[in-house]
Image 1 (cartoon, rainbow, N blue to C red):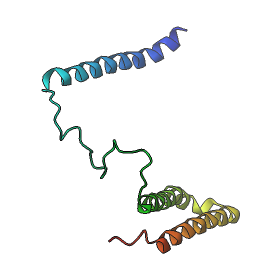
Image 2: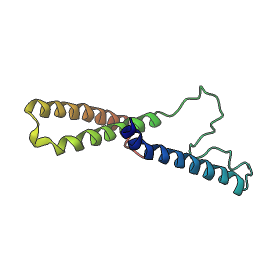
Image 3: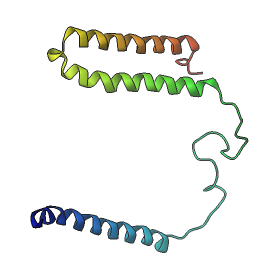
Image 4: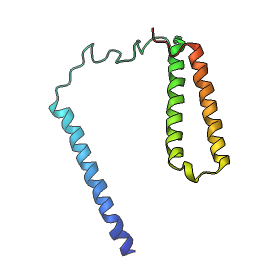
Length: 121
């Protein structure tokens, strides 16, 4: 029991010091900095529309197309990079499964291309 306590003792000390330090820094930020609310601070920030409008407002389809495009490229990179690092040790079944996955991603990319998501006006 004493061995377990010795191993975790430094972790508890670290958590305790981190908690105290974060509380002190957070408190000092409110004590030192002058807090004044103005119209510029409470306005919409980088979103392009007023966030307090009707919840049923429609969005342009390009928001969704850009999101799908981002997901296609993000998934492709996040799955391709580890796959390429172990490519020599994979079987032919694993190889063709990954090719099938890339074909599905390519179909999604072609869909976005035909929808005009790549045309920046």
